[in-house]
Length: 371
Image (cartoon, rainbow, N blue to C red):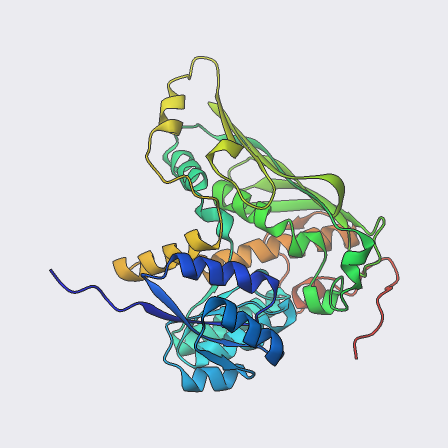
C-alpha cells in the first residue's frame, strides 16, 4: 500500500472570534492537517491564540507568513473589507485561500478575484459550512434525482437578535467594512444553503429597513424570489428577533423538508413529511449511515481535503459564492430602487455591482468615522 501523504500545512490570517472555530476544526482533523502558522496585526492576540492551539509560528504580517512557510491552505478570518486583498496575496503566493463569508464586498471585487484566480491558477474558496451537513447533502441528492418531484415553495428565515451594544464595535454596521447588515453578514449562510438546493434564482423583489439598531446598514430585509425551475421563495434576514432561530422549509411535489436550528444543525433539527400516498419516500430520507455531526467548519475543511485527494474541485468555488453574493446585491438593489431585479442584471458599472449600498441608502448614517 502507498504510504499516507503528509498532513496538509495550514495557516490562519486573523485570530479573532471566528478563527477559533477554524482552529478547533483543524485540531479535530489533526491526522490530516497541521496548523503551522498564524498572522495578526495584534501581536498579543496572535500570541494568545498560538499558545492556545499550539501553533509554532506567529507573524504580524501576512506577507512574511507566506514568504516563510510552505503552505497548502490559508484560512482568512479577518474583517470583510480585507478579504479580497488578502485572498489575492495568498493566491499570488501559489496557495489556496479559504475565505470566511462574505468572500468580497461587491460583485466587482468578486470579478477581480476571478481574474487573479485565472492568472495564478490558485483557488479562492468561501466558507459556507452549512452546505456540508449530512442532511443537506442528502437533500441535494434527493432533490437532484427527482425523487421529491418539482420544488414548488420555500421559506428561508434568519431571525436573530443583536442588541445596540453589538454595534459599539467600531467596524460593525458599516457598508464599507461589512458590506451590509444581516443580509450580508448573518442570513447569507441560510440563503446560501437554500440556493445550493434550489439552484439558480431568476428574480428578486425585496424590502430592507433600518428599524431599530444604531447601524448604517439595514437591520432587516425581506425578499420574494423566483427560481429558474419555477419555485417561489421568501427570505427574511433580521437582527431584531428576541426568539432567535434559523429556519428553512422546502415544499416539493412529493414531500416537505424542514430545518430549524440556530448556528448549526444535526439530524434532530430536520423534519421530513411525505405527501399523502408517498410515504415510501421516508425510507429514502432515513436511508444512510452518515455520522451525525453538527454542521460546521470541520465538515467543509474535510471536504476540501477529500476533493484534493480524489482529484475533484473543492467547494465552495468562486462561481458558486458569486451567485450567493449576487443574491445579496440584488436584494439591496431591489429594496433601494423599489423594483424587481433579475439575475445577471447588476453588471459592469451598475452602482450595486460596485458596492452593496449602491449609493442609494434612504436613511442617514449614524456610525462615527473610523480613524
